[in-house]
Structure formats: structure tokens, C-alpha cells
Length: 125
Image (cartoon, rainbow, N blue to C red; front, side, top):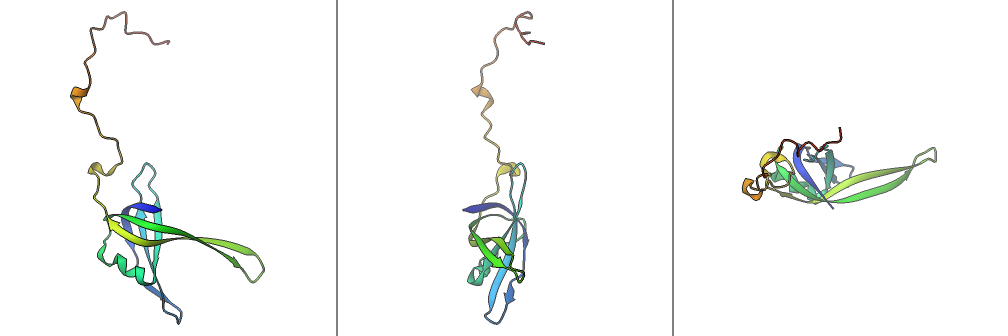
């Protein structure tokens, strides 16, 4: 799976516990009709992959969806999901920044023939 968009935020590398677990988060804003702000985490040695990227840059991130189960002290089972990145690459920004279909050239259309004033009003209202 992959996520594509512009980098909105690149977090600092965080280290947890005595085992040296490392995590770094990045937020990518998709470029579609309803843009989404997707947080992706990179862990361990993958945190270094983000060093050469900057805010505003268009990227494509290969991801894995992760899910886990946790039972709290009261015995209730909770479920958590995360999006984990394992590869990131820069992509070229599209002209205009929107995913629009290409516009055909003007000469691809034929001009309308002679329209008689009485013939073109075929609307039912």
C-alpha cells in the first residue's frame, strides 16, 4: 500500500525505553477533492529515511497497516491501529496540484452546424 501527498510535518526522532526503540512521525496531506492529513510513523533504522526530506515536498510513502490488541487493567480489550512507513520517495508535483484529466486540444471538436432558432429549444420546461 502507499500514501501520496505533500509533507505537512516532519517530527523529531523519539527514543523510548532502555532498549533504544526509535520512532519518527511524518504527516502527509493528500491532494484530492477532500484532502486528508495522514500520520505515518517510521521506526528503528527507517527513521533516518526522513533526513533528506522537507515540509512542502511531494512524496510517495510505502506503508504497512499495523493493528494490535491490548487488555487494560479492568479487563477491557482495546484495539489500536498504526500506519508504518518503510520506504519514501520524492515525486514530481503535477501542474496545478490537482488530479485532473488532461484537456483535449480545441481542434479535437467540430463546430456546431447551422442552428435554426426553432430547432434548438428541446428542453421539457
